[in-house]
Amino acid sequence: MSTRIDNSIKQLEEITAALIQRLDLVGYEELAVFAEQRETLVYQIIESQELISNEHSLRLTKLGEYDQFILSRMEGFKNEASNWLSKQGAIREQKNAYGASYNVDSFFVDHKK
Image (cartoon, rainbow, N blue to C red):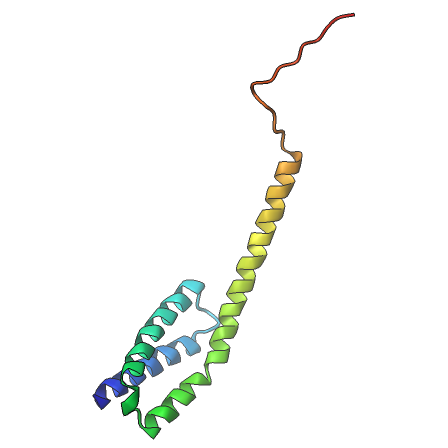
């Protein structure tokens, strides 16, 4: 059972190291895939947490040191998306303000005097 924890932690270290090496180049899709893989591995580790040794704890603590860098990159993507959505909302408001919204079923009668 300890080998399962070792394998999970090793995989977690590998995917984290690969991500950190390319952190400035990764897109949000790659970060999403990383988060899913990481979640799966963490759940595997949690299932066997009673077998975690001091060495395992040290390795997991070291992995936690990278969290701030990864979260910072994710926050950057979140801010970009938020700004984009705000701009789209402003554009939509401007189009609605200047766009003609006529009622097709209405008509006007002009009476000559």
